[in-house]
Length: 209
Image 1: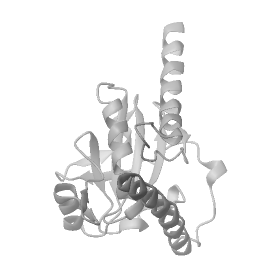
Image 2: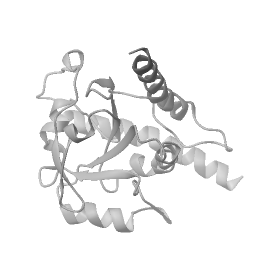
Image 3: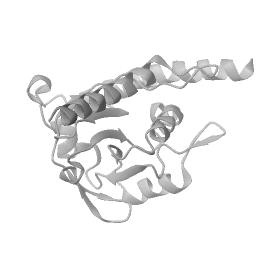
Image 4: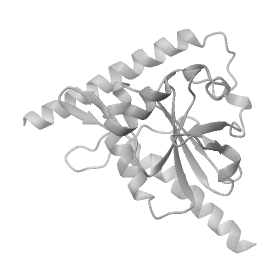
């Protein structure tokens, strides 16, 4: 009973903090004009991973890419860590799907420390990402990198699903919220459906050719 109440409190906290985070970020980015309708292709980023290697969007041509934006100690991010981990596990053996998390901290060491030691939420330690995701950083500019300006981001966590040709499939996919009583959330199911339907469609096109 206590566990269920705690889960409900955490979900409520997610909703509140997500609204608050979006509101705060919107104030920081209000000088940018919306480009939602004009964005067709993914931003051609070049960012370093946690080993200092340069990673480019172009490196993943031919694959579905899930871009996942976050920063250290982002509470909504931490609460969604488990369903995101489950989703990465679901696609673990699918070479056509790649997960890339983009950290928006300004300090590289802060980001790297959170990858190794996680972040505390109450008495629990959460690891937002894992080895099934490619971890990149926008440090030292943090949120004010060109990639966030391009996507007109207003807060985190933010996910963007990109197709095999670099086309944007979904800029605001459903939120993969935690499961309740062993039942996967509708958001997680719809998130997977976007990817799976695209993969199926691509497979049919390839066979037709």
